Image (cartoon, rainbow, N blue to C red; front, side, top):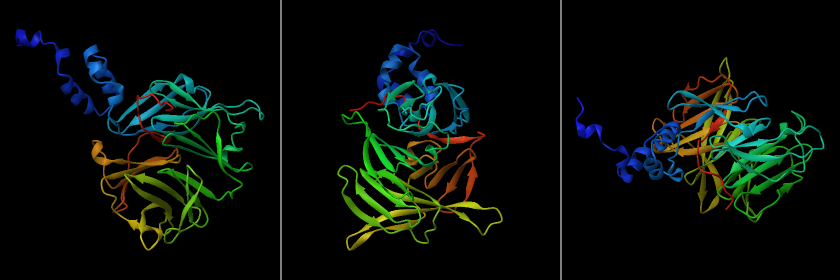
Length: 352
């Protein structure tokens, strides 16, 4: 039997410090939103800017462009969330980073320019980017040879055949148009933006040229990893200050080809050029990889995340958890066509 004191208790009078502590321990964004919706006191005590980091969701393939809904799977709660993102209707999805997805309209004619924007599907906030003087009219040309990357306050678009340009837009600067960083290059390269540097990787040799992104000045050249094999996948990741390369290749010794992942750390020596050193332990880091990009998280910041693991999405196929030390892996996602990782955030993106 409840006492009179328990019945009349005013939960809105809880100390702000206690409310903030509770909010920071809510593992799901849906619980965080419900918590803030209880009353004004709880909402004012837990501003969106204090929204704690969340374990990345998995974005399911959308039936583009016929529906505005986006489907996400949370591995921590084993739930599928369906979010109505009205501003994504009729748009092409081409990447995800920092709580936003990079989307583009679908030009109706070959002469029509393409309009890119960043969209947060959780609050339907759209950050428009300047129009581009090229179109994505065809489903195969020229988008099949393009790369997209959303770095820290910078968006890259690599125009492949037949344009050969690397364009960028800085969110934190007074910039009205896309800028050209590099043009006239060979097609056999991939680029990564890490720590204000641009890493250009030659796909057929594995040699990496490093350039200061702010000045365009060459910094150094990194030899390829040991036993480099062309036409394999590789990902450069900034992991709490360390630059890591995840090298993906196939094990042809098996009856059914299986993907193997080797991890290398960029080692700097006083007496020699930087080089790659193979490692099987990256400490408290967990690496997240998909077809659009890669990033690292501190495993201790998230319940259930395993340190020294790779969380890998094979486009439209499966999600694997891979132990870097042993190479053992297990499947993790029930979605039929997982597309990429998405880090849920409520904060608005602003050009500073």
